[in-house]
Image 1 (cartoon, rainbow, N blue to C red):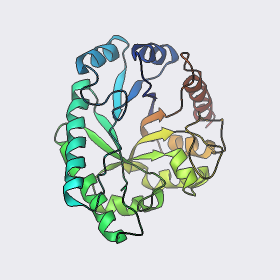
Image 2: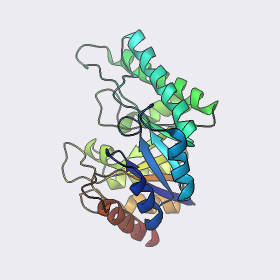
Image 3: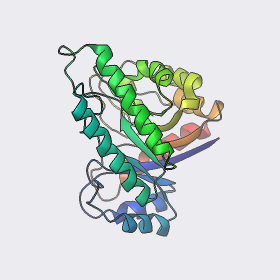
Image 4: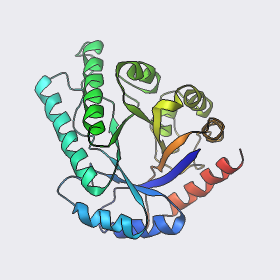
Length: 263
C-alpha cells in the first residue's frame, strides 16, 4: 500500500507558500490547477519544477476543464482535445506524470442523443490516455455529477477505454454514492482508480470542496477500503482555501490520516 497525499493549488498570487506549507505539513505532492493559476503560458515550468525539487515534492496537475472534450460538434471536440494535449506537454515540463481530466460534455441533454455524446466523451478520453501514455503521463478521468456520465457510468467507461480514474468523493456523494457505496466501488474497481479527490460536502445538490470531516461524507469506509485492498495511488485534498495558513488542508490531512491509521 502506498497512499500519497497532496492538495490543490489554484489561488491567484504567489504560489511558493503552498510548496512551503506542503513540505511542512508532510504532504507528498501538490496538484496544480492548469485551468486557473497554472494555465499554459502563465507560469514558468522550470520555476515550478525547481520549487517542487527544493521542497522534495512531486507534482500532479488538474488539466483544463472549461474546454468541451465531449462536444457533439466534431471540430469543437477536436480543438478541446488538442488543448488538453498541449496542457499535458506543459505538465511534463513541470515534471508532473499524472493529470486529471473531467469526463463530461457541456452539451444540453435535451438537444442531443445520449449515446452520441457519451461515445464522444469516451473517444476523447481514450485519445488523451494514449497521448499521455506515449509521454510517460497518466491521464485520470474524473467523475462529476453530469448529464451524460457520472460515477455510476464508470464501469462502462472502463470497458470503452484504457484510462485510469480519479474518484472524486464529493462529486460521487452528490451523485447518490454514499461513503459505503464509494468504498464498494473501490473494492471492485480500485485497480483502475489511480487518483482520488478528497472533498467533503454538507449538501446533497452540489459538492462544497470542504476538508475531510467537515461535511456529511462518511470517509471511514473509504479509508478502510483503501487500506484493506492494499491500494496505491495519490489522494488530493481538493478543498477551498480561505487564508494564508492553509488551515483547511492541514485539518483535512489530520482527519484522513487518523482514519487510515484506525484501520
